[in-house]
Image 1 (cartoon, rainbow, N blue to C red):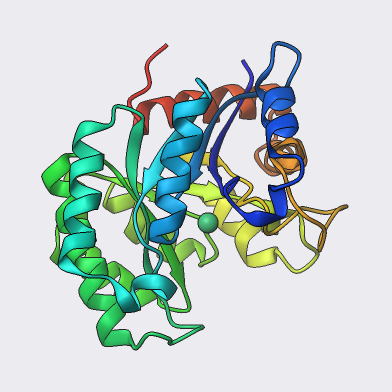
Image 2 (spheres, rainbow, N blue to C red; image 1 turned 90 degrees about the vertical axis):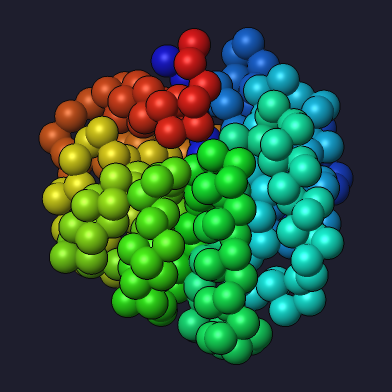
Length: 260
Ligand code: NI
């Protein structure tokens, strides 16, 4: 099986010069990528994700607004998200949504309000959520419990919390997106979490163009670097890289309901 990339932002302007070439190569017959889910972060990013999904067979879209971008959200934007999530068969999830207290702009209150509203939207359209959570562990878990996010399930993207916290997300039936951070020298806490999380809850992601794994840390990221992440997980789990790629592909198809 080829690699299922569960989280990338190919709408980003850093791909303006070679987006078409890259996507065609990676997703082509001799490329290493099976499917890419392009994740909306702003409303514009959502529109661009839909355009990419329309253009490329193997690109799917998640639409939702990132906590740092919810400041200007309106009820009519929510209406637009709803319409597209319902109508467009290539929308596989609502995201990325969540809380980012590292940058408390907009305020916690505003972030909380729109996280709650977007979980409600996901429940209405019956699609899984893709959660972005940074320095906001307890509030993320509290809101997800209170809003019964496990009714739709989803993915904690770029998982960066502890093994103990992983238990809470596992109890809600959530999956864990593991990205380039796992290859960093200071990844001890994350390695412990990955040791603990069962293989059937792990997913591969790059968050391209961000978070390139070692040995390309700091450079523009793209989905071909996912192999470094798969290798690292294989090493942690004591299985082969092929097993990691196959199992995570199977997991991704399950959560996004993309059955072969
Ligand atoms: Ni992202």
